[in-house]
Structures are given as C-alpha cells and as structure tokens.
Length: 300
Image (cartoon, rainbow, N blue to C red):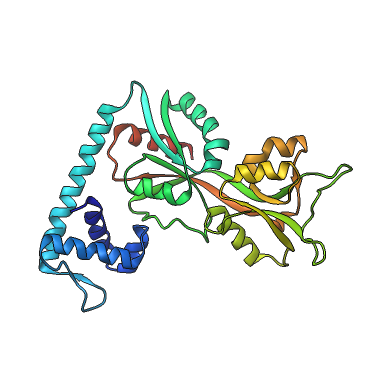
C-alpha cells in the first residue's frame, strides 16, 4: 500500500468525482481509477460504489475513510516534526520554483524576507511547473513559486493549498535592436518575410501562455520557427545574438531592456500579463512555515 493511494482516496471522498479528484491529484482519470482499484485490492473490499452518480463510499469505504484520514494526518505531522529536527542551524526552507523565478525573483525576495522576518536559509530547486506541483503535492517542498494566469490554472485544491500573489510579470516579445534604431524584427511580420521565432516547447507553461496569446490576438503574426527550448534563459541568449524574436518575462530581461541590448518587438497587444504566486500546503504544521505564512499574509 502506498501513501499516495490514501491521498487519492481522500480526494475522491471529498470531491465525489473521479474526474475532479484526478485533476486535483495531477494524474489522468484512468491512472487515478487504477490507483483506487489497487487500494481496494489491498483492503480486500470495494470502497466506492460506482453504480450511481455521484459515486459514493460503501460502508467499508466510510469506515476506511475515517481511519485513512487520521493515519495520513499523523504521518504528515510526524514528517513535519522530523524535518524540523533535521533542519540545519538557523531557519531553513525547501523552495521549488520555475527556472525564471529562481533566477530573477527569488534572490531579492529572500533577501527582503530575511531583513523583515529574520534570517532564512533556503534550499532552492529550479524546475518546470509540472514537477514543481508534484513536489508540493508529494510534500517534497514547503513553498512553491509559480506563474499564474486565470485561463491557465494549476488546478490545486484551494482548500488544501493556500496561495498569495507576491508579484506580477509580463511575457513580452523582444529581439535585438537594429544598428540604427528600433527592433530588428517587428510584429506581426508578413507572409513574404515571416519573423524568425525562438519558441518554447508547447507543453511548457510559457508555451501555453504563448498559445493563449495567439488565440486572443486580433491579428495573426507571421512567424518562422527557428529554435525551441524549455528554458526562457536559453531563448534570451538566442535573442541577444539576433537569432530571432522571443517572448520573455520582463523580470528576466529588465537589465537588457534598460541597456537597449533587447527591445520590444511589438506593443501591448502581443503581451500576456501574469501573476507570480507562492503556494504552501495548509496541512503542513511546521511552526516556521506557519509564522512565515502569517507574515506574508500581512505583507501581501
């Protein structure tokens, strides 16, 4: 029996929907159903009555739910105690964040928090959005930083995963300037002269933001795919040497915009506004996280 099966079962009991529970657990519905079946095989009884809608817990399921919720909470509390005891001298945090956020936001944010809240030690793990969410859900970090757009939600259960907006950013098109003045490549381009495009993989969060922008744009840009990467910093370096136009977070290119080594390749219609949010597991009983979160609520 795996702990994640208990978490799946509790999510199903809470939502009374296989699809919503699977979404909250960041797994496909078919994979989620297989894990519930595996739990039932381990218990030796059907825990969910699937004959009606919404699915309901059986008598065995109701009994098991009471015990599972208590056992899971004790495991979470015990883990928090152990992690607190194992923490290095000084206040320490396990933080996971997107690569761009880890580079452009977290250093200054941590410095500010240390000045206001007290000395903080942190282990920062830069990764993609999908893995960030998994680390938060699996209890492998205490804070998760991620971009957020209303039409591209992360599908975290708000009753369990609290969040605060700690900043704002803009995904904007930029390129190298011409020798005279103005952008080397200017949107929207033309059919005969499409603009070389340095793009994100479609499955990345910024890739999805770009797809959203295109769906909402009043006109169609003429772009010629040239290079592709999952990381905004790679796109930035390619844009700096004149390889094409790239959509980059303004926070990542603030110094380049100020110095003129990168310039806007289009107006506001070609941008996407994003929130920068910090998430935590509300079930985490760690004393430091509780105090820090209360402080963040007072600041933001």
